[in-house]
Length: 118
Length: 491
Image (tube, rainbow over all chains, first blue to last red; front, side):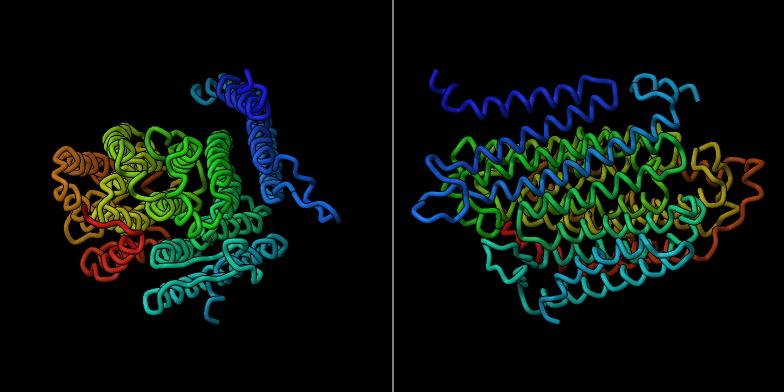
C-alpha cells in the first residue's frame, strides 16, 4: 500500500497521461483531440515539478536560516514547456478554425468522407 | 569572429524572422530571407572548416560555464549536418521566389518567409546545441513553424495534414520531454557531454531505461521511422512546393542526427546496441524500405510517391545506424547528405511541373517530359540517384551500406538494400513513363519549359548529385571523421 500512497503524485501523472493520450487517439472531434493533447502535456508538467521536489526543502528563494531548498531547475524547464504547449494549442485551434471554414465540420470521419467524394 | 560563428548561425535567422514578417509586400521579404540564408551557408561553411582544422568548438551562452549554462558544442558531426541544412536553405530560396508567388496569397508572403526562417532557426539550433533540453525547444520551434508552413498549401487537405502532423509531432516531442525529465531525475544534468560521463553510473536503473525508450520513440516519430511515418506522406504531398523541398531535404535529416548523437555519444554503446535495440533498428529499417517502397509504387500523385520514397530512404539510414559499426554510421551520414541532394532536386522538379500545370497527379503530367525537357532531365538524373545508378550520389550511399552489411554478414540486409533499389526503379519508372511515353494531354500541350529561376536551383542540386557521385572525398571524408567522433568502431 505504501508504494501507492508514497508516490501518489506519480500515479496522478500516469493517470492524466493515459487519459490525455487515450482522448487524442479515441476521439474524432478535432477540438477534443486538442484537449486530450493538453491533458497529456500537463501530466508531463506535473512529472517535472514532482522531480524537482526535495524532501523537507523550502521554496527556492534565498532566506536566512534555511539550508535546504527544492530544485528550481525543473520548474524553469517546465515554464519553457508550458510556453511551447500554449503555442501548440493556439496553432492547433487556428487550424481547426480553418478546417471548419473549408469543410464545415470538425468531425474526423466526416472530413474523410468529404475528401473521398471529391 | 572565432566561436561566435556558431551562435550567429542560429541568431541571425532568428532575428531576421520577425523583421521579415513586418516588411511591406513585394519582393523585399524574399530578398532579406535570401541574404540571411546565404549568410547561414557562409557561417556553416566557416564552422565546418574551423572544426575540421582546429577541432571542437565550444560556445558558452551568456558566459555560463557548462554544465550549468547552455553550451553549443560543435564537432564534425553537427558542423556537417548544419552545412547540409543551411546549404539546402540557400538553394531553396532562389527557387522560392516564383513558386511562392504562384502558390501563396500575396498578403501572406512576408509571413511565409518569416515562418521559413523560423523553421531554419529551429533546425540549425538542433544541430548546434549541446544541451538536451535545448534540443526539445529547437525541435518545437522548427515543428511549429513547419505545421504553419504545411497548412499554407492550396488544397484544403493541407489543413488536415498539418493538423495530423501537429498531433503526432506534439506527441513525439512530449515523449522526448518525458524521457529528458526521467534522465534528468537520475543524473541531475542536461548537458550532453556531462550526461556521457554520468550515465554509466546509473545506466542499470529502470528510470533511465524508460527515459531512453521515451526519447527514442519521440525522435523516431519526428524522423518518420516506419511504422511511425503516418504523418509524412500527407504533409509532404499537400504542402506548398517550396515547403516540401525544404522539409524533405532537412527536417528528417536533423532528426536522424539527433538519433545518432543520442545513441552513440550520450548513451554508452554497451547499453544501447548490445541488446535487442540493435535488431529493432534493423527490423524497422528493413520494414520501412520494403513497405514504403511498395506503397510508393501505387501512388497516383508524384509528390506522394516521392514522400513514400522518403520514408523508405529513412529506412536505409536507420539500417545503417542499426549496424552500429563505423561503416554503418558512415553510410547513414553519407546517405543523409545524398538523400537531401536527390530529394531536393526531385521535389524541385515536381514543383516546376506544378508551377506550369498546377497539379502533379500521374494523369496530369502525361507527356510533359517532351514539353519540359530540362525539368524532365532533372527528374531522370534525380531518379537515377534515388535508384543508386553508378556515377550518381545515390550509388555511393548504397555502396557503403552494402559494405557495412557485408562486413557483418547480414545477408538479409544486403538483399533488402538491393531489392529496395529494384522497387525504386519501378516507382521512378512509373513517373518517367507518365512523363515521356504517354500521349500529351490537352492542357499539357500549352505547357512550356519552367522559368530559369526554377530550373537553375534544380540543376544546381542535379549537378551536386553527379559531382558527389564522382568525387567522394568531401562526403566520405567528413562522414568517416564524424563516425569516429561519435565513437563507433567496427566490431
